[in-house]
Image 1 (cartoon, rainbow, N blue to C red):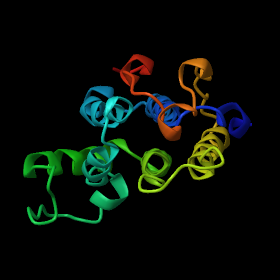
Image 2: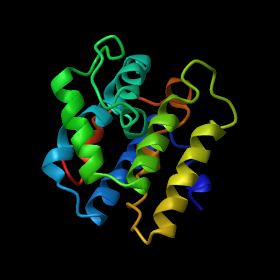
Image 3: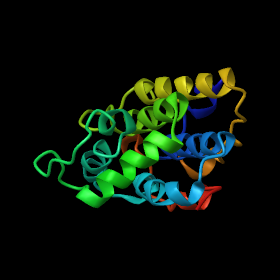
Image 4: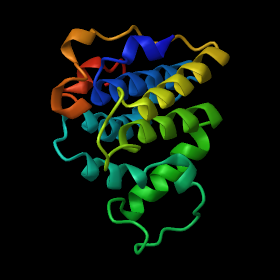
Length: 175
């Protein structure tokens, strides 16, 4: 069970593992990886950012389920995404995404932001719940889970549970 394996692991490392799961899901569904790279670059910034709320506000605009609700770009609704990017993302999510990809994307986002403005206690169970949901989606769809990360490098005891910053892209199998 993933909960026990990640209880002592920082939230940043949990998000890193979640992004690895998303990447494996993209591979499983034979997505055009070249089209996904720039979105993955944005996601991977989480592990190296000092101010996570910057990532939070930008990534909120990239969420497939939120973006697919709109059919036309409205500059008043977007602070980070340009009109050109909006239509590229819209096409990407319509042609290269599915329910599992969208769910895992949303859960990675939630895992990294659910406790962003609160103190992490009891090993941050909210982010562990998100990770368990990702694991369940992967198992139900027979998608291979990534190897468990080296926990000693990503202690929950550092930086109040968020963990030290690191270059998460090094864990990527796509970038």
